[in-house]
Image (cartoon, rainbow, N blue to C red; front, side, top):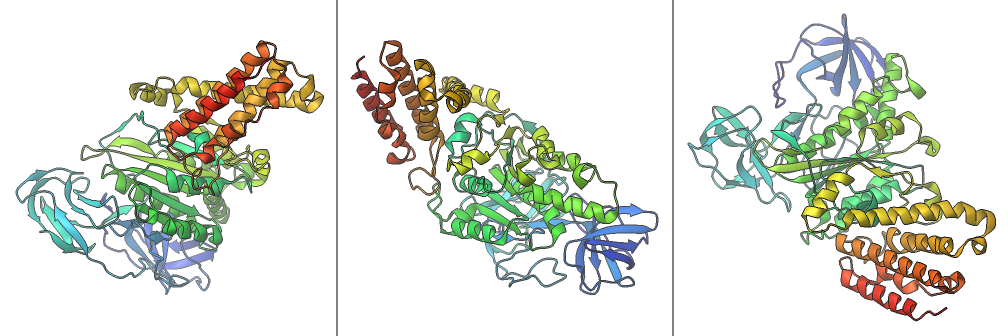
Amino acid sequence: MTESDGTRRPARAVCRILRVTGPLVEVEYTGGTAMYDLVSIGRAGLPGEVVAISGDVVTVQAYEYTGGLAPGQTATPQGRPLSVRLGPELLGGIFDGLLRPLSGAGDWLRPGTWTATVEERAWTFSPLVAPGEEVSEGQALGEIRDAGPTGVKVLVPPGCRGAVERIADTGKLTVDAVAAVVGGTEVTVGALWPVRRPRPVRERVDSHEALNTGQRVVDLLFPVARGSTVAVPGGFGTGKTMLLQQIAKWCDADVIVYVGCGERGNEMADVITELAELQDPRTGGRLADRTVTIANTSNMPMMAREASVYTGVTVAEYFRDMGLDVVVIADSTSRWAEALREFASRTGALPAEEGYPAGLASAIAAFYERAAAVTTLGGDRGSVTVIGAVSPPGGDMTEPVTAHTERFVRCLWTLDRDLAYARHYPAVAWAGSFSRDVPVLAAGHRAAGDPGWERRRERVGAVLAEADRLADLVDLIGIAALPARERIGVLAGRLVREGVLQQSALSERDAYCGPEKTAALADAALAVAERCRELVDSGVPAASVEEIDFGPLLRAREDTGPHDADGVAARRDAMLARLGEVRS
């Protein structure tokens, strides 16, 4: 049997290839092969994974191009599941769907490459325990301080405990070097872990702390708790990639794992280039230094795309176990599901809706289920938050991937085509989105001294709902035909949309917005709208109020710094004073 840390079993007998059809390879069953075991296929030793065993036939999905393979060639089971090496080299690195380093690997990986060759680097190890000390699973044995701004800890692996028989001195160690011996078990700096097996934790916990993304429409209306799940569905051109890139740049997580799952090569190149150039607002260094990029673009082997999301979550769990908050961004899960559909059609499985396999819902649920806020085996608090983009064909939100995903996630940020075409970004539709994390986050805000957070969110939502209701009437009969209070309702919706929710990713001051400034902008728009209602109630014509220049308030989001709540308040007070001068 395979050990929990992915250690290798003795390889089995060489098998004969029976059939090859695209990424599907059937080989003869010679005994001793288990589900999800790795298989070396053909003369080049292409990596593959056992996905079915039926009688005397084993079905393998190949993770590289199978051109040139033919029946009669050999395949060799490797006696271990698909595993990735987790270590200090991950931070700042760029990898493919099997976590093979792409930096310095040339235009294409050599066929049959299991782990791409990279320059072996020695890392500075500092011990945190002494010989003879009793340790248990998940406890930190030492740390690597030169592995990015967060550092990397060497932990006692799951299932291991006992006395520290030996611990390395402070100095340079390679990834494969033994850092300690615990209870007769050698603990290396890096470790293998099966990607389809969640790393164990002590317990899952409820999180009352929001993940601040710096995007006002998200943080104000549809917040996400640390350790929660989000889906971002939207048709072509609605700004999914731009929104996800903004979150990767500005959210307050310790580590970002960006999975480009079937994305276009130019989009991934833009992500990598921008991350390398951006300054990390938390550390002052490069943002890329606390980011792990998994680039599995649309021209790479399709089934490696299927494995890439599990690889990304496994990397995130590795850093979570060190007591860090990690965000996994998968762009997009639709192309991951397309890989499932492609392979299912090759196997001849009975298709479900739109040709997707019958187990699609279970696969989506299993992926998002690995997000959680936890108490680690070592007793620390950590979290993995999963944000997955969904690309419904033609913007059809009823298609299977979107519909199933909506069932399992805690938050939905639906991107609206009309908003995007109106150049309103982020184009998150307030009428078609939700956050199931609001009740727990409201309690967290009350405990943190902000009891008005939930009320502010409700008021903004009510203003937008009223403005949407009146928009249809305005289209039919015109704004001048509406009663005065309804005209102010339309104006209030405009103040909230343009002054609060709209946000420019290209503006140095507006690309990121701190929570205190977000609250100040919302309060300012609500206060000005309420003052306008009071004016029309006192007899001031609605047309006179509509003619007022609200530009200073609408420009406050770009005229003030990312955390300048006082500057926003000053503009609010100036606008209220100007409204106080209006007379009937």
